[in-house]
Length: 261
Image 1 (tube, one colour):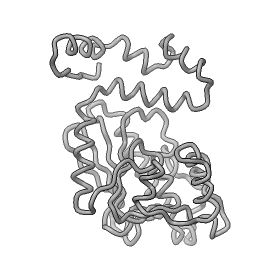
Image 2 (cartoon, helix red, strand yellow):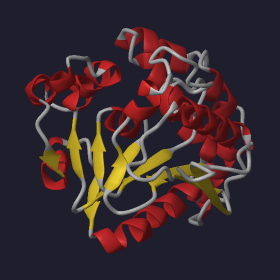
Image 3 (cartoon, rainbow, N blue to C red):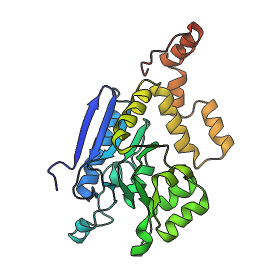
């Protein structure tokens, strides 16, 4: 194992988080806690606007839980840190875009981690699966999330059989946004990240809170919370300089300058 299982790179308002645990980038409890701290810092830093999650190497993105660490004493119900497994799955109040760059095998908890991101870009050689069924256990987070993201019957096929999907099929069913050549993946992800970095951060925050909270609400209740400015991020947006800047930029036929306030 490397001394530093997580590497970070910052460029302007973009934070790239790289999982680096040879040979397969599996996640143990200690790594999960580090990832939670990294993403919590990203969440709380107003100068950071977009995060990229990727992994070292070209064979594995992440297979999920480190079974060798489990055999060595890591408890399955142990302390995963502030963000839950992988730092993202249960991190509260993360209202900034996170992009997953899948550069290889993405399965089990690794796929659940990718599903915790807002957009997924994959190299053409990436593969996806939920193989938990073969070891007699349940893909817990994926059982909740996947049937809401792709057609029910395809999700159940993956959960019941553990079969592998290539990047093209994952894209066809809609949980991969784009496919890139292996050597072009980083370039494509950074291009998208820079585009989002230039966008309105208060609007992104409102979108993420509304989407997250509305998942368990009736449509009218969620809409009423938006129009009454009950969502904190919506209230902040509607009282912000950025809202006026958007209106003025449109009227003046110029690009807006977002300040996040």
